[in-house]
Image (cartoon, rainbow, N blue to C red; front, side, top):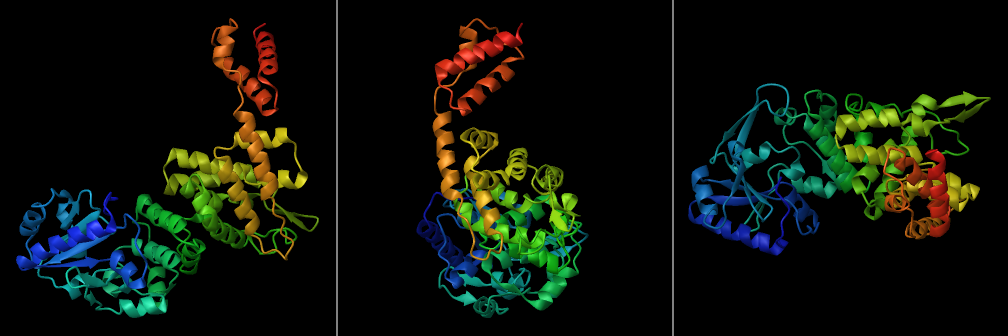
Amino acid sequence: MAENSAFTLEERLDFAKEAAEKIAESGGRAYFVGGFVRDRVMGVLPGLSPDIDIEVHGLEPQKLVSLLEERVPLKKTGVSFGIYSVPGYGIDVAMPRTEHATGRGHRDFETFVDPCLGPKKAAERRDFTVNALMEDVLTGEILDFYGGRRDIENKILRHVSDASFAEDPLRVLRAAQFSARLGFEVDEKTAGLCASIPLDSLSSERVGGEMKKALTMSAHPSVFFEFLRKTGQLELWFPEVLALIGVEQNPAFHPEGDVWTHTMMVLDAAAGLRDRAKQPYPFMLSALCHDFGKPETTKIKNGVIHSYGHEPAGLGPASRFLSRLCGDKKVAQYVKNMVLLHMKPNVMAFAGASVKSTNKMFDDSVEPEDLLLLAEADSLGIKKSGDYVDLNPWLYDRLAIYREYTSRPTVTGSDLVAAGYEPGPDFTEILAFARKLLLAGIPYESALKQTLAYARKLRK
């Protein structure tokens, strides 16, 4: 994947055209390929740093490298696959190649660079027809060997080749995330093929990468998981999500149906709030994981369905899920914190809780603004009958109070040292007491006196 670029799209396209002219003078031909062409055909205007992939036909690798390095030194991290990155421009230049699976898994391939392969054969190794389009860099002519334009018009995601598609199991996940991102239906034959491909040879990084794209780049991330459910591909990599299917909820509070249905609705609602989140990807993971504790805690008592304690019960499943597909400790900390607290904002708002209580809730949160967004998504993930109560004004008023309180002077370790206390293990407890006073709105001078009295008591 090309790196982000500091250049404008126009400057990058100018570079591509200059390179294509040199390539043509030497007997070769340069084509834009992949998602860049697909998005241009769809009329999607790229942002500042979209990936730009160029495939060069008719030149030997050494000659191509020589021509490009007349302008800028190349980054040659993908040389064995015939791929060269142009630093600063966010452009990858590749040679046409064939791949042959020698085993199971993405690394078990033999790759052969073939400058004379021809555009049609080169496009045949692409995953979907909409990604197999090619655009001549110099003339703008679109080469469409496999009906990609037709499928874009009909919003269909269709594989190019039965033989090559199944060689990389990641394409099952790519079908799911492209369906979610593009809003395309997966062709029935393609979906059937996806259902038949084992995913056990994939790495967690690759699976997590496709999930991340679906969660952060699509308006309806639920489509990603619905497709995997339809094709029977949830169990291996997403067992915690699979476990939500069929878990009943109290219809008085959740008329939408089971926990799966609710979670999918929350995901899509969260996608609409994602741009406001301080940490968009962890926020979306939190929306996915927020009710992971319900399969364990859901019971029927006296004919009433309840799931008491599902928030703390969700920490274990969330930890396992994140360990498998994320591996980032800070992200895991954020998500588990959100899972534990996700019910509190709305519960406190309905109860008209005290400022002291809401201050503590916000103080316990790793990202208070995101917690309120998750609570909003959780409310939106319910099919209501016109009785929706907007809790945001009350909650955001309380958040403003919390921000104002925590901006006030507070007792610090320096204050304790100035009062003659040597630092020790109990400083953490003493300062936690001072923090409680701050959240209760106690003025600094009074808080200092109370904190010093507490310290004296501890050290007797």
